[in-house]
Structures are given as C-alpha cells and as structure tokens.
Image (cartoon, rainbow, N blue to C red; front, side, top):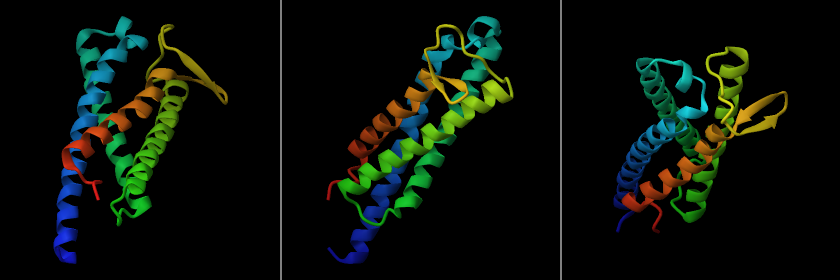
Length: 160
C-alpha cells in the first residue's frame, strides 16, 4: 500500500472515530445528566419544563466539553502516528482537559454565579476553598473512557 493511500485510509478512519466518539459522548452524557439530576437542587425546586431544559442544556454543554477536549488533545499530540501510545495519550489528555474544565465550571457556576446548587445527596470532595461534586467529576473520568473504547471498536483506528 503506498503512503498516500495509507494516509487517506487513516484519515477516513480518524473521521469515523471522531464521529463515533461524538455520538457516544452525546448519548452517554444525556444518560448521565438524567441520572444525576436528583443530586442538584433544581430536581426538587424546578418545574418540569425547567428541569427538562436544564438537562438538555447541560447535555449540549457536555458535548462541547467532550469535543473541545478531544480536539485540544488531538492538536497537542499532533496525531500523526496511529499507535496504542497515541491512543492512550489521546484518552488521558482528553480526560484531563475535560476534568479541568469541569472543576472550573462547577466552581464558577456554584460559588461565583450561583447558577446551580448541589442537593445534600451529592457526594462532595473538598478542593481548595470549595466543595466539588463527585458526580460531575466522575462523569468526565468515566464517559471519555467509554466513548473512546466504543469509538475505537467501531472505527478500528488504532489497529496498526
């Protein structure tokens, strides 16, 4: 197989991989947002239209977090060699970027803006001068790993 044809094949599989990753983070985050909604005050104090709007809004935000983290990780590692080491670096960096943004976002929206609040059911971790919910933190540890596994299984990008 000549070099141009090989690069074309890798690019096509990368696009398929990225599409599958995006679909899986959208589906998994929609499920996660629905399941952890009772850990926030809005579940008990909001009306159904507000709760539904919040779930959809947060899921869309999660898709942007996942996609942006994936793109940043791809740029950071320059994604020019398809190997298991590249795959592992992509997974780890995407997760680090997503978790980092989540910590910032939770701090910003709970403590600075007061946009949402945890319910007493939310397990929390003390970090610096604030408390971080365990569920949103786990969300960005668990979901990227599942999304990458599924995307690679479907696209077979890292099989060289």
